[in-house]
Amino acid sequence: MKSKEILQEANNQSEKIIANRRYLHTHAETGFDLTETISYVKNELISMGCTPVDCGKSGIVTLIGGQKNGKTFLLRADMDALPIEEEADVTFRSQTGKMHACGHDMHTSMLLGAARILKAHESEIEGTIKLMFQPAEEIFEGSSDMIHSGLLKNPDVDAALMIHVMAGLPFEPGTVVISSPGVSAPAADYFEIRIQGKGCHGSMPNTGVDPINVAAHILIALQEINARELALMDKAVLTIGTINAGVAANVIPDTAVMGGTLRTYDEDVRDTIKTRMSEIVSGIASTFRAEAEVVFGSGCPTLVNDQSLSSCAENYLKELLGQEKAFTSEQLQAMSGPGKSSKTAGSEDFAYVSHEVPSIMIALAAGQPEKGYCYPQHHPKVKFDETALSTGSAVYAYTAMKWLEEHK
Image: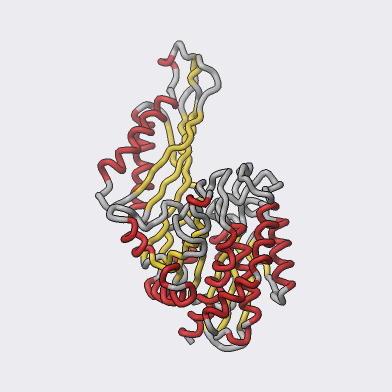
């Protein structure tokens, strides 16, 4: 198997990959509610001779290869969009009131393109390649749901790869950044702080317990964790994004609810902050005669990149794309200058897979600011450069086949 052959095959089906992407973009769906998306992906897989199987609430798995004994390599693409009304200037704007503002339509179409390449080379695959089409990444629930439904079994997965397109990178479309070993994306936790006070007339605060006052003190007190309880290298971001209480200006309400997120690059730091949040919230509430609790909702752990797999991916992708279009996150950091982080601040629920099997995250440049791709991910006007799609398909296919060939 030659790298240039794989790249050429991907380029040859560029129009098909783009057509897949535009259909998915137009029919964007969110969370686990992916009826149209699932039907489309399954039909595409069946048309190329694959046998898609349901996995979990809305996931799809299919196997390619298996004609030769060997290990199993997992390729992942997420399928869900965001609850955003699209404002991007494109001819294929979403018709659903939802938007693929994070590029998951790109990921899914690239993996479908890779599937066609892999089917054409099925007899050459030294083992099995498992394709994972995942729902509910944006709410950090899809990957875990698929794992609990047997994703990594039958056959057991030995290594895994994900690609994420990136808008606004100052690199030629199709340039890849291979994550260096270690954590590349932070853990994420959504939380709600529920404060129970005692409502009363605003003119008689002594007869009640003001939950808004408690919320104000909690908001300030939580900042103390970063300022005084974390070491210099213990990076974390604790954000309160919502505070909701009351309906009338002259009434002290019964309750107040605060909502926010926590991002951390270290699991021990994550646990420490969550413990301290509960202690601070409870203590502040008690001080002011109220009751309060922190309720942690959906989230995901840190995304950990395997050292050996990172090294392999770097070698493979430099073979495939050339030295000028493939580099590591450490090399990116060196190019960016001192003080710049090579880690992303966005969390990624592929992290659940990375805690089970050796995994690697690869970023794919898909939109240069100087060419008009100036809006960031999750923005209603974000656009992605479709010329990167065929490269993404080649990256998926070549990395999996090459790794299996070297790990017989």
